[in-house]
Amino acid sequence: MRMLLLIALLCGAQAVRADVIQLRDKASVSGRILTEKHDSVAVDIGYTVLVIPRSAIERISPGEAGVAPLKGGATAKAALANVKAAIVESKDDFYQSALHPGPEHNVRDLVKQIGEAVVQVRTPSGLGSGFIINEDGFLITNFHVIEGETEISVEVYLQRSGQLERKTYKKVRIVAINKFADLALLKIEDADTQKFKHVVIGSSDALAVGESVFAIGSPMGLERTVTEGILSTKTREMQGILYLQTTAQINPGNSGGPLFNLAGEVVGVTNMKIMFGEGLGFAIPAEAVRFFLDHRDAFAYSNDNPSNPYRYLEPPSHTVRKPGASPEP
Image (tube, rainbow, N blue to C red; front, side, top):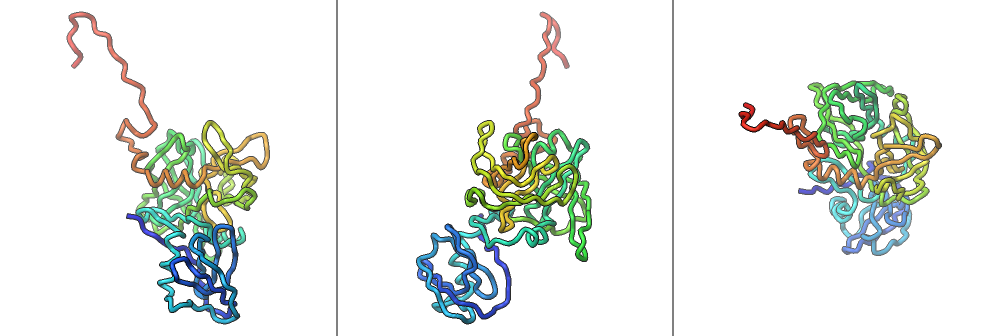
């Protein structure tokens, strides 16, 4: 069962210029247009912001100043129903995924808003980064961060009185792995867990080369490091796989962390860089992350199952028996 959701920014009603957006299904919405992109329009309707895809709009008519109401007798609930189907999709309520980018914000505000959802992943042999995808404590990181490890801890940074408070969870289960896509799904299972802040997974397909992006992670163990850059290319091919290339600084320890657009949506998972160069970082596209999550049962991990996905055991050796020897018990 697929549930459709709408990500919205709440705000109070105020005097604005009311532009009228006529939708293709005969409904209309009035509000102040905040931003217009090639594929969407962000509209402030007084108590929330709607991001309407261009494909759903028939025409836009400039209006006069005033309180932004809904025209044509439409209620707020009806207006949301008209546009939400094309905005945000969540499969089985497991994660939230924005199909079209939301309104842009500055990096400073976004870091405050979504910073708690970015975590540090530790193993006996090293550390990496990750990000929480739902309130139950499921999180994404790179496969190479936890490869060969079963003792994993996750450090979460919680906002307390304007300060970040570190909390370490040591009961972390590997849920699914995909070695070839370099992705792993983990779950925090400590007894004292709470409802976790989580991110929205966006679309790298909706990005344009040159758009601003930023990463949060723990390069060289320096937790909560924010680096900003642009998307250099969306189709950098390496060993038959396409990656996002970015000028946002990526270093060891960033692996598994999120690459965000300016709507605060995850558009990639940082996983490597060219060591002898600067501004040459790479990320796994968000579409690959959604595929992994949607098919997580096919990549399910179990310590008791020798047929774990992509983890093949050595074939058993065959004992050569001499003629007439009795079989082994």
